Structures are given as C-alpha cells and as structure tokens.
Length: 297
Image: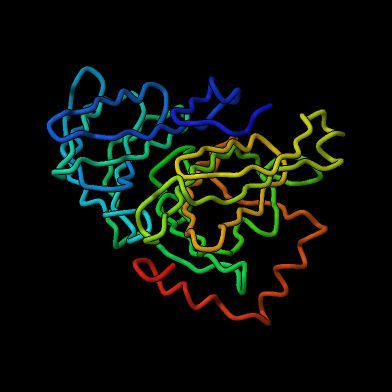
C-alpha cells in the first residue's frame, strides 16, 4: 500500500475509520464553506488570519470567531478553532494576501459546540536531546485540549539535521500495546530563509512493521520516504520514525490522530530494539537552536 498521499485525505480514501485532513487556501474576498458532517474538526491557520462563522444544524446558533493566525508555521504558535460535527462553517481570509488553513478531522458520535483556542493557552515543550532535540506544540492533545471526542493534534518542529519521532514507536494493539490510533503526518519544509515553505528542501520519514504485526495479520510495511513541503504520510499501523530534517532545511509536521478508544490517548510503545535511546538523553544537551517558538529552530 502507498503511505504517501496529498491533501485532502478522508477516512474513506485512507481506507481506515477515523482520521482526515484537508489543507485549503483562502483568497481575499472568496469565502470557503466547510460542512463537517459526521466528523469534528480543528481550523488551524498555517499562514495568515481568517474569520470563521459556525452554525449548527439547520443554520441555528451562528457564532463568529476571528483567528489571528501567524506568518508561517516556522515563526510562532497560533490560535485555532474547534468545530463540532453536524456544523456548517464559512471561512474568510482577513489577510490581504490570503490565508492557508489546515483542517484535521476525526469521525465522532457526539456533537460539541464550536470553541476558540487562544495561542497563549497552547503548551510548548522540548522533547529529546542532542540530535534528537525537537519542539512539540500541544494545541489539541489530551490534557491540554479536552473539548473533543476523538480528534488529537499536535505540531512539531525539527531543526535542520535533527531527528524526531525517535525512537520509533507505534500506536496499535500488537504485542501488548494498549492504545490504537490512526495517524497522519502533514509535512512543511522551509527553504533557504528558514521561514518560507518551499519544495526545494526535503526530509525523510520511516514506517515499518515487526514480527508482531505479521502475527496479527496486519499488512507488512517497510517504507523510507523522501518528504517535501506539503506531503502527507499515512500511518495505519506499525512503527513510525525517525522523521529526519535534511541539513539546512527546518521541518514542520502536523500530527492528526484518532482511534476507537473510549478516551483520547497518545500512549505509544517504542520499538524495544531502540528504546534505550530515551535513556541516553539524560547525558546530552538540548540543541541550542531550539530557543522557543519564534526562535531559530
């Protein structure tokens, strides 16, 4: 099966049950409509600012939200909006040059009202050490954002030359791993100026399965993909990682996760062959290029 896709991705097109992703460009003066159907969504500005008007079933209870957004995914965190299932949303750019918006989604059963997420409520953390130092932006993760039934999202910034999603790990029910999540990686790669996304730069993404997946009857996977700005990679099961940023090119990715569990969880199981890597971080320093969002990442 091919793990590389381009947006939009729906649960149907991915061949799974929950996760989806679209990326839209809003031109000035040209509103864009979003019908959520049976899924919950985040409206996440990638570049530019926008206004979103959300109405419930039959057009009732309309609310309007202004999202300040950001210049680039490589410059700052952003505010965002949760939009529940069975809703209609109209998105309009507030930027003279337009706006670019990610729309991660997950099928769910319960309708929740729209809710605004301010940028100053987003939790940012540094994970790893040494060449595995990276920055995680937890805007839609359990414990940080609990106004969702299934949808889990975070952003991650990897400095040029560094590795992330490492050591390799999985979110499936094989070999005693208890939490099952489908996962989407949406990549952006900055160009020479370290800020503006550009297809010139590149990185690598690895996904593979082990003996436990074969024993469970799951499709065997063994792919190391070159990823460029705008690429989408699906992880239906198996170990994923590392994600590697080529020297000279900062890497961003948006993770979208959802699964059948009654509670949202990002729990994972490392590949036991490489789990020792985590213990090694205690003797390494954090990459000094990670100076916080808006710094030189």
